[in-house]
Structures are given as structure tokens and as C-alpha cells.
Length: 469
Ligand code: SF4
Image (cartoon, rainbow, N blue to C red):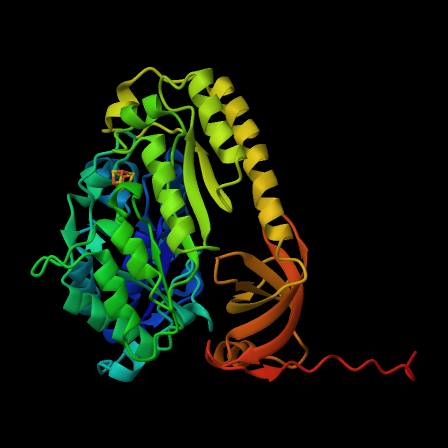
């Protein structure tokens, strides 16, 4: 049996691409391996958005060389943004890589996997539609697919980005906007629902800039069309650009019952001077207007964000403005990063903020946002939330990790006797939230349901046998 192992770094676009590769591999007769040492083909889906991701990818290529040294028949494939950017350098630094596929060559990778398939089998493996559908195609970031992977599916709505933020490599490695037709997107969503997805996440580098190439329909229209599909339980999307949200889009979203109540709205900086240098195409006041619209049309929705600290020329005053904005408590959570220069982008050539200054600012911002996030999570204590299971907790396999609709991690003990398969079959759990931290919440499972809209059944409480003591 031929086996393929897929390891994914980076954003949800990469996760969506990995799902697509897993799907074509399953259709070509491969099994998905959870362990690279057991695979015939190793696929590394790379990211280059930060220096750290790039170094980790080369580290993994070196690690995979050991597997290839032990069995020269194993093939190593590198795909994703680093593959696009570093083709020639990679040949020098990692000559053991067998094939490199850029971000626009996913279907060619599928064809190559089909062509290689016969090299790994004793007999011909017939194409199995059923196997393709049942394949655990929701790749986890660490490359492991499991009984829960199919519950959340990614569907990409566009490739590339035309905005050229001065810190970002995406337009150079993924190209300009290339929006997929609405019918192709709807067909993919239907396929994922059929394969058991309970939540479908629409992904794009600037997902809300999507336009149907033929009709000009916008992202609000797309959400409405996806929401009308039979069997769709929950819908989410990532990552939008503040500039592309319109009032009518928010009004439309308020009408779509399946949308999860969370919007990721990347601010990047609270200083207009920095936003201009970043080429973000909005001012802080315009950003605040979008926040007000969310409050008006989508009351109660969580807003999360991305923040960059130490962007070239960021002064103490620029940073203070970001810190002040975050301290107002507008964001339920934030992904904050110290600016990391990316080769080939304008900002990489500008004078850099000293690392010690950037680190000090980062710590201040981190503390401020953590206090807000903690307060947001604290407000959940005593409530009961319906959550979608993600799988066993990575730190303690006797516990289950799940996500609230606003994407907060919740950890609960697994009632005895419940297998992973049983949990995946009834993946909606009602959790009474009992404690909170910055990372998420803990609680107790009260009910389980097979569908989001079902009342579900109560979870049996463990019976204490006092006679044993
Ligand atoms: S909007 Fe800016 S940060 Fe986002 S993908 Fe496009 S260029 Fe990169």
C-alpha cells in the first residue's frame, strides 16, 4: 500500500492546499500516513511569511533526508510559498528534494502523485471514489490526520493577492488575485459536506475581496449562496481585509444563520503613519468605522486581529497608539508578531527597529492583549456553549479539545467509554464553562449532539461506587 505523509506550515491557505493534495492522493490510491517514517512520499507544504517558518521548513527537509537515506525509494516533495520563492536556493541547500511545486501547481502535483503511484505498489491499485471521499483529508498542522480532521473543511475561494502590503511576500509568491468561480466553490463545499464536514471555512488571502469572475457577485453574496446549501451546519471565513468590508456585506452576513460569530479583522498597527508605510489602504479611523459596523449589524460577535510590532521606523509614539487601541478591549484575541523582514519585499530594505526595542514593545502589547483576552474568556464562566470537537487534547489525551463558535479552545474530560469514533460521530458538545485562562477555557461536557441544530442527548455522569472505598 502506497502511503503519503503531508506536513503543513503556515496559514489556512496552505491547509486548504494540503487538503486538496490529500484528496488527490487518496483518489490516486494512497493512504494518508500519520508518521513520516512510514510513508513512501513526504510532502512538505511550506510558508515563508516569517523567517522562523522558513528555517523550520529547511530543518524538516534535513530531517526527512534521514528517512530518504534509510530508504532511497522515498520521494520528498516541497510545495507552498517557500517552494515558489526558493526554487534555486533549495536545489543548493537541499539537493535531496525530489520535486518542487509552486503555489499554482497543486493540480500538477496531483498528476505527479498519480504517475508515481505504481512505483510503490505490488499490484495496481484501482481508483476508489469511496476511498477518496472517506480519506481523512483535513491535514493537521503537524501533518497528522485523525478521526476528527474531516469535521472542519477548508475551501479556497481565491488565490493570490493584489494589495502589496510592504511587509508581505504573498503577492510575489502566490501572484495577483485569481478568484474562483462561484459554481466551483459551491461544488467544493457540497463535496466537503458530503464527506462529513460540520464547519466549512472559506479561505483566501483577502477572502472578502472575492468577486465572481463572470457575474461580479461579492463576498456577501457568496456567503449567502453557501449558507443556502443543504446540510451546511456552520460557516466561517479567513482572512478578510478591513478595506473590503462594506456596510451591505455586514447587513447580508447578519441574515446568514450558519455564520460563526467571529470576524478576524487584521489591524496590524494603530498608527496612521505605520499603516501608510505598510500600504494597508485604511486609516485607524476607517478601521474603527468597520468595528462600529460590526457592533451594529453583528452584535456580540468576537473580533480578533493581527498586529505587527517593530515595523521599520515605528516610533515610541506609533507604538503607543497601537497599545492604546488594543487596551480599549476591542479584540477578543490577537496574533501579535515582531516584524520579520522578508527577502524581496520593500520593507526588508528599510532601516530596522533594534531588536531589543521591538522585543520590549512586543512584551507590553502581549501583556495588554492577554489581559483583554483573559477578561473575554472569564465572561464565559457559568455559561453553556455548544462546541465542535477538535480531538484529544495534545497535553492530556484523557481530555477533549473543542472550539466554541467564536473559536475559543475549550478542554473537557472525556466521559469514560467514549471512543474517538463515537465522539466524531456526535461532534457537537454542550460544555458548561467552569474556568478560564488566556489560552481558553475548561469545563464539563453536559450533552452531545450529532447535528448543530439538534438538542442532543445528556452525557452520563460517572457513577461513584462508594462501597469500593
Ligand atoms: S492584504 Fe497585504 S498582508 Fe494580506 S495577503 Fe495581501 S499583501 Fe499580504
